Length: 629
Image (cartoon, rainbow, N blue to C red):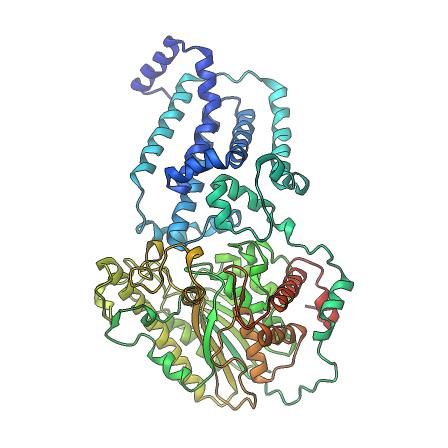
């Protein structure tokens, strides 16, 4: 039989003999959610001033979060019949979630959203980040205070007066009320009247979290899908809006040579020589520059910074726009539930074999589930490779491996051709302590950089130069092939090299550590990544976007146009978008300057309808083209 430790027995006897007044016990039990609401918002803010503003200027938003915590707390109290266990669970839950938000914001400059919870199955993948973070002493103090508060409730044992069947009947009632309060559209529409919370599709997530607090901001996103469906969405509306983009059935495709098509997402592939006043002992992108001098190339204005690879990846594979979805979205986990249009589907309909490969866990972002729904016949993860796995002192399989795997796949006999998309991993963050110094083959120097910033940059240069070498390997192989082949290589986003946008700020490359304060030129700097497109044969078509910055979703349409692939509604629409507004990002209010407001709003509206129809709606556009995936 378990016996209590002597010290614990003495403490329990003290509480029992002291016979604390019932009112004190009730105040302690009922005050715990209020305490945790203050703690949770402070952790996310890490600022007494912002917490004070929440309490005094946005009181309704604070009360909203307080109601949420009380709802969860009493749901657990009805389940357990006591206060200590619910306090322990709420203490862990409402301490851990804002703590994740704090560190995610610090590292990736983005907040923690409900859909991020879908990455829980890959929690072990984030262990490499733990060594690079440090807990502020204030958080450790709050952790100790929370533990002492819970210990008091555990030993004082305040009594919950509702017993028996009444308590068990209360569990489903409270659960239904809580879910309805958070997700019901009618109730959500009253938030402004009740709490002064204004939510619409234009509201920036940073504004929501900074003004309404973590608990309110996190909860508001549970109902964000409700705002996605256009009010007049119907088959007749879609036919009216998109009929002009349906290709003529008489279009000739006999002259299409069916080249192998390779699309490579190179993790955090970017040009570090853009940093002001920084000197590099060697050019980290020497292969890229040599290839780009001879073939179509340019800059892609990414839809994310420092992380969120799934968003530009999804845009390039489908031509859809994640700007029409809630900020921080993860389209594979949140929305991709059935077969949908992608360029893999398009090439598969032309008789191609379709394959995805990734030198990491294929379950990450649920790619192993999403890729078959996008028309990929197979998806290979890190331990499915045919090529030998190569490692160096870094934590990830090198890009040399993925280059060898692509070459292996191109060597296999195919009836028509191969459409292959590859996602690299070697150059993934964090960069603070990634490689052994003996592996640094490029030295970095600058009077503006701290020692740690130089270390991070030298680690980054090691990774990006390895990526560049893999590009050189693929170029050399493809250009000597007889089979027509085309390759698109692009970086998904800039690297997070330090906290608060260092060293971009410390070198004066940008002027502020708040994205809301950046000029348009600085936005281009912080979201533009290089890409290159090359073919080993004469495609007989000019590349439309030479020297022009473009949004990610335009690249597959531009590739198809360049190689003369059979047109579809999506490529025709996206080429129209390119001709009108090559850069269109609602995330950052960044648009091509020559595009009028009217044209921009029209195209954004059409792209929103297209994305909703393909990803969530009835797929009327596929029906218009006769697609049956």
